[in-house]
Amino acid sequence: MVISGSDDFSIKIWNLETTKEFLTLTGHTRGVRAVAVLPDGRLISGSSDNTIKVWNLETQKEELTLTGHKGWVNSLAVLSDREIISGSSDRTLKIWDIQTGEELLTLSGHTGGVRTVAKLPEGQVVSGSSDNTIKVWNLHSQKLL
Image (cartoon, rainbow, N blue to C red):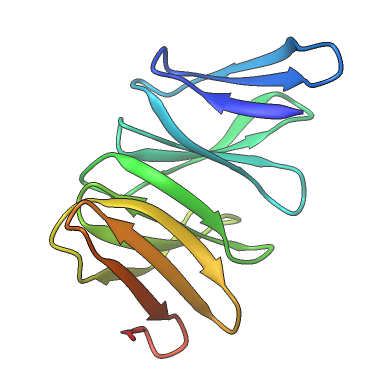
């Protein structure tokens, strides 16, 4: 399968063998800018409506909406079975508990919007920003490396 987010506010899941769409999820109020799949098969989506949604693909229903960013959610990465990280145009990265919806940590340091975030080994993440920098963060110490 391939998952896509769109400016029409939807998420579409496509069958690669048939090249046909087999599921559309709606719920965001602006364009979907990022998607990722959790280890348990649930889907997360980030949007220019400043929210992150957690979706159950079996029931095709939204389970949680995570709010806290003050700008578009541009990027998502899965950290563990329970945690994700998001990058936003509000210049922050946030770590979330996707079971409870709780915001666990905010990382600040970019002077432009965060465009991308990825998990690295040993408790580190990397983020790229419109400020033309790439930053590496240690999540254990909560410090910029």
